[in-house]
Length: 142
Image 1 (cartoon, one colour):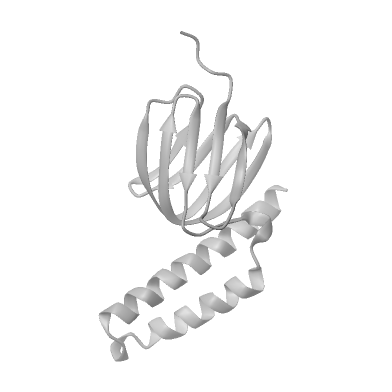
Image 2 (cartoon, helix red, strand yellow):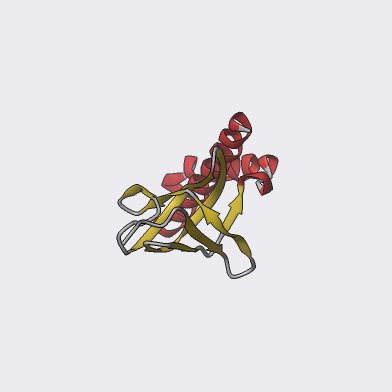
């Protein structure tokens, strides 16, 4: 049995599909670390964390923000299911910067907030920082 030449990427959120195309490579932010997928990859089901995913078609890379989710990997297909995701070109840097500042202000008052509020502020900061990094990384590459 020969290996497939490409892999079908299906990348969706509840609101809309973000990608449905043949690609050469996908890299995802797994809960246990980033992992890459090439055509012919062994079957895998993985939980995803907040972070950057990218996929490649030829020499062109496409970047996206993920706020967790799941990936199903099969030898000829990768399905990425994310509650919240944004392509790099759709990230509003000013909005992400403002969210980062708000989260940092809440974290600075850590002694005055309960554990649940602290965790919510920490996750907000992580999301904002990831969005900023993805947007800036994508612009440098493009």
